[in-house]
Image (cartoon, rainbow, N blue to C red):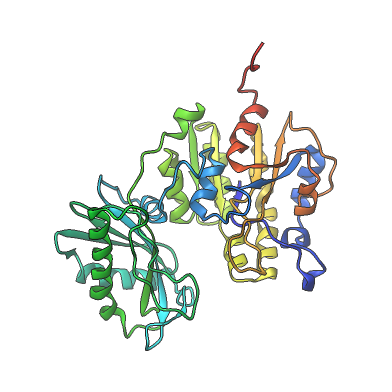
Length: 388
């Protein structure tokens, strides 16, 4: 169970509490009192701030330094696009530009999904090919969408066409590392797409521009089932997280749009799979907005829905985040995220609640997120003794 961006920092204006510590979580508290092990996880490496891709791949047991995946590939898969060899995908945000091309709002006021769909439909009808490359545009949720370039001789990764802050122009995408002819061709294709697309939305408000990130092609990754002998399923709302699950071969269980509905789907599918990845976005979203109260409320909403999931307790339950998103930073951070592990064999740290402060004192200590699956499998008694 991933509460995206769960980890946070104690805030002076909030009685030196984190949103997790400030939230009222009676159902989570009862689970803790049953007996759980707690700790903190480093998503990639000490001091490294992860994107959602590396953060989740680590939770799935893949070393994010070994398996590097562009965010565009993940988003494209999550939206149901089938990537062919040589396809290059980019994750995109509609944004707001001023008259000089300076980004004034990276998310265009978080436009509604319907508005995003209208804009994507407009661009898809006007831009179907650039040179010898096909262009595929598909809307996601809110201000997000995907651009897929399909043609001969294309390759990523490229740097982001995104300044990652307001008050700066959109930078040009450039090849990362070795500047192959394929990567140079892809960079030119991205530049041509900007030239072709921006005039069509220039007079739209507030979404009169867009940013491209994670421009890359799909790498080869072994399946989750092959690695762990578990039949996995994903229950997520946002395309990116469905894409991450699909990337490692998890079955996407489509349909649920609320956490309660996600938990109900888990109950319905309980006997069909033996590993579930359930994703909850709003803790991260409010952390990025710097909204302490909203992040606290998102945690309380999770807690209110938790009894639905607990109608059929899994043999092993891990509740954590893919990274920390401190409200004071309004961004992902390098701080280890808290993790709770519940099973018949997890033991009890004799703590009252699941919080960052409690996790600091937990028996799991601080460990790399890529080892979480191993701990879950051990608690499920999937391993034999090592050595004589």
